[in-house]
Amino acid sequence: MAIALIVGLHLAASLLLAAFGLHRLFLAVRYLRLVSPRPAVPRLDWQRLPSVTVQIPLYNERYVAERAVRAAAAMQYPRDRFEIQVLDDSTDETTAQVSRVVSELRKEGVRVTHVRRGSRQGFKAGALAHGLRQSRGELIAIFDADFTPREDFLLRSVNEFTDPRVGMVQARWEHLNGQASVLTRAQALQLDAHFTIEHGVRAATGCFFNFNGTAGVWRRTAIEDAGGWQSDTLTEDLDLSYRAQLAGWRFVYRDDIGVPSELPVEVAAYRIQQQRWAQGGVQTARKVLPIIARASLPSHVRREAFWHLTGHFTYPILILLALAGLCVTWTAGAEQRSWVVAVDGTLLLFATIALSIFYGTAARARQVGGSWRSIMMVPVIMVLGAGIALGQSAAVVRGLRQQATPFRRTPKYRLGQRHDRSWRLAAYRVSASRIALGECLAGTLVFGVACIQVLTGVAVPTGMAILVGAGSLAVGTGILLQHQGPLGRDYTRSRASAA
Image 1 (cartoon, helix red, strand yellow):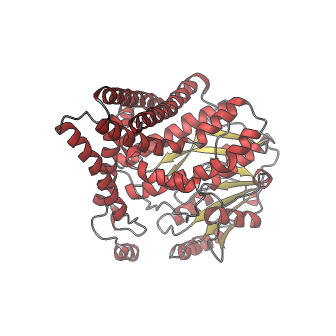
Image 2 (cartoon, helix red, strand yellow):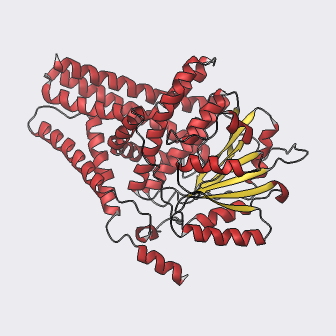
Image 3 (cartoon, rainbow, N blue to C red):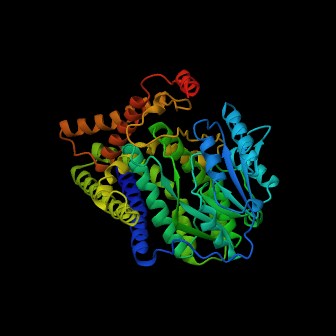
């Protein structure tokens, strides 16, 4: 009976993962069929451009704060209808840097304010809500500290708001350090696919898609009409996006407008970022999926919202699949073992093909590095995803339990491209050695069981179990290797004083 239950769990997990893989394949096919390039620069129809407030939320961003503020100030827009808010919750020397830059820009005639709060309550959502109450703009443009919008960003994006139904315009992320390492190349491909294919298809088919927290412009009344920024999830951007679209506002995705940004270079930082997105995504799903189910929406909109908001559940499903596979191959009879190994191998092959098409389509659309070279990153993405699956599964559980956790930001270092290792001696580095040791241990245990199975002639281990074991070892080892050497606050101070 127990063996039948485990086999059933394995089959159910396989079917669920296959469904999510099929959805990725479906998005790639729909992109090729439905999405066409739009004009590079739309015609400006305004008799008088609307007023714009640019918000830059900061928390301890000493390396990138000045660059972010100066990039915002350099954007082309009528100065009498333009202001910048630096929403600074920092507790280190970032505040002094911002004060100096703000003072210099004011002397140059830029309307810029340095907004400080008494506490960090509500984290980023709280800072944005606090700034909104003090802002003057009809439109609100938001940029994280590591984003550097080009001078024509506003002039190319605000024309979408000539349609009174448009509540938000999202631009595409570009990558300042996308070729710095294997990790950043994998992230760049993942994000290119998210924006170009996922956003592109959802926007083209009238489905809901989300503001990504930065590199976008909101209509102020859309934020207010949807209930404003709320801090009951870790993904306040996703939450507000769905509430606004449920309130009837239309979103526009501009794939032709790119905003350069910095990708995490530390495996530990990437892991933290992904956990925040997973926990917040599940919190948002709990909050808005019941509303979507009851709303008067086309069926394809409801279906796509479900796939979008439940995507992070693939991680606990993967862990269940790997554990069930190990249990079956260890305890079941020869016929059941061979059947499970065959199902698992077929699923792994299908996942590889589906992801290769998905990411290859994105690489071809972006024309970065060549489609075949990008497809070679698919195994890296699969190993990386399997490697963070344990932590992501824990984040999904926290999201389901509505467990309150602090907003852990992703550190930024103002890095260059290849061979820039200055981050190793910088402040803000993420310490995660215990977690890394745990992941190495988990990977070793999986491989140990697999090796015993092979050596004793019991069975061939399942492909998903090997993938999870390899991923856990790779991620844990990567974190440990990156965190050899000093954390370097003294180096940071000496470098600043030398400059």
